[in-house]
Length: 461
Image (cartoon, rainbow, N blue to C red; front, side, top):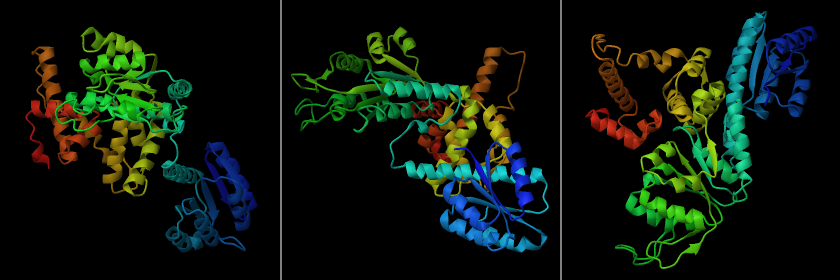
């Protein structure tokens, strides 16, 4: 939605001049009103992001207008303009819900800066409201945040795939939103009225995975005291999402291939197969062709899964979308943590766009969530994000240029890895699962690093 500003002042020339200047300087629509009553009528007819109103006006003054606006829409951003004699009234207005005030006569540059801050706050509030409203609504393509051509292309692919019933393989780095894409394809398809069944392949022990996927009959193995319906049967008429399919054991790859080929499955211990009607969507962050070469993944299963391939872009390829993503994650964090949404300074926003994000959007979201929870001010500044400290990892390594390059490189990487994990555990108070989410490293991989460097997690709890 395009930003819109409503200017309210009984000085007709001032209103006209501000409209011309603001329209020229800022990318937003500008409405005007010369009385409080006219302003309220406009607010009932048009979407407005921010109201800029004078305090001293005949008939209905700015304070009365503010109170009426707050009763109609308490989340609307209102900025008061005040003369020298009305500063106390303006301060009082802040206590009654105004976002800020500016004293007349003012410099136009200062007004533009204040309006931009107010609009940023409005966008955050709008996003927060949208998230609360959308909590009980069906997922939509708006769930993929961004305006870049790459994101637009991904949206179009998802839209096309949702109209078919083909098997889809979603690939991409960790944290790029492969699960979101899967839910979108399902929700927008003819199967969307039924719940999608999600399976995290490496999360279940290999010994239980077959029974969980395909079910078993009574007496199939020790402990099978009754018949159990598998997840494929639970997804009848719907979609099953096989996340991290690259970690599926070879023994189960053969059985999954049979399901894909014949659209039928045989529960563990059963004598006969039965037909199923299930769409399969799979996802992986691994290079399956390489796993085929190494003998870890079946080529015929890959071709069956890869009927349609959707590649999710990593964050470093859509950096122009970072401001929109940051805005969305700020509102989401505020909503989930039940606190006021913060803003990000221009310097921090610039830093975000020049930073590498190996954990992609998930890493960005976790960073912003951490800032929302820990930074006491309403705006995230450079000094809050501790970038300089992070850049100092391994800075005290003795760079002996007479040593072999490979040996020196390994030494620096080892030092960086150990320091990074230790600081991560300190930040999360020793919670390995949360540390894995923040870093974008799989929990099993992070645990291996912890064990390799003999890091005692209890020291951080």
